Length: 205
Image (cartoon, rainbow, N blue to C red):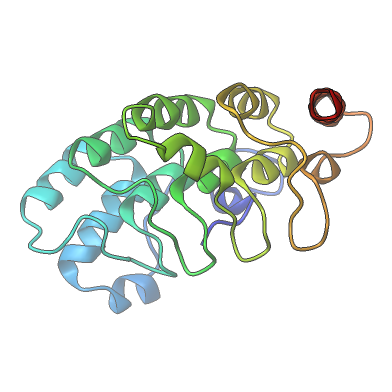
């Protein structure tokens, strides 16, 4: 499930990263052993364990783990670039959707992981039309990856998406453009408003 701020699972009330303790007992009990090993490795960022688990997995790399999340969703959600790289090398899909219609790029953007966003965009550039499709993919609330990045006020990610061709004028289900996701006066909002104005000017010309 791609929810902005979901990575806060690893941050305490003081904003200090907590040590990753692995899935809860309930989560472990609900997953078959081989899926648990995959999910645990992707979530904790243990690329060696992920590689070993993939080598021994008889299913599909895009099998949903929880809430429709694939391993690539999980690696993007928790910000583990080496795991993302391994999964893409193993041909994980960039366009699989979770139960809320979000793709892995939504998760990377929500978390503000610019290194992962850049890697995904570069990787997708070799797949015909993939970058455009991802940038225009909306979740169940009509949010694009740019909406997610703007909501988290991740300036670097917003800039990467805009340079890749993301549309600053696209409205979500509630009629909100990405700029409206960010607080007033922030650099993210200023950049997106400027992009909207420039896009409108080009359209009118």
